[in-house]
Length: 90
Image (cartoon, rainbow, N blue to C red):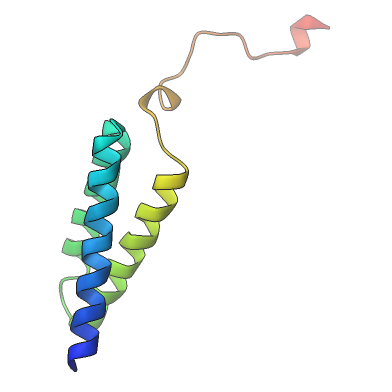
């Protein structure tokens, strides 16, 4: 492994943590917890080899970017009591 690989991996991990901290400052707590959970799961799943860890880190970074621009909110996962059947309205 050369030094460039370690530098790129360090930049990817630091970028990932910067995005997570930014979300925390924006008070997007649920989104932050989902992102941290994905990061921990990826780290445990891909800890066998260095190339798998690099792949998992890069994948987690892209998930962080996607979640930053498309935030998740807890109320989206709780079913509402509102009537969504529009057939009754006809």
